Image (tube, rainbow, N blue to C red; front, side, top):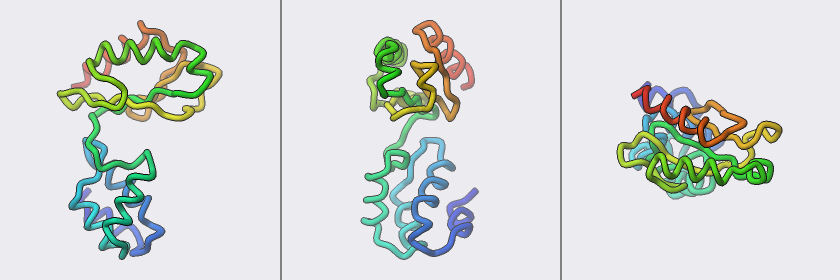
Length: 152
């Protein structure tokens, strides 16, 4: 779907801004919004590009910084923390060769933290490409990463 197709789905009102940004970002393989798209969205909803950028910087679900094809979100809330989430982070960082907040050089994975993923009873938990994994161990993490690497 082209940018114009997405823009035409929404009213030319500022109240459409967040939904527009989310949908435009969803259309891109690197889960980000480009400067050209920011300009087009700003013009469509009749706000300044600075306003669009302020929304981008405020909401963690929207970004102008490219991410990997698969974004791995690690729950950072208390239940996951007390259930050895640090082992999961260490395993992911070691396997991927990156730290939290970084993207692999091949653009396949981005590693980031997230607030509660809603699976406190089954912690620790991560979400990859919209799918949640629970009751994690380092061995389960290795299998999950192998599965996503195999999709390429």
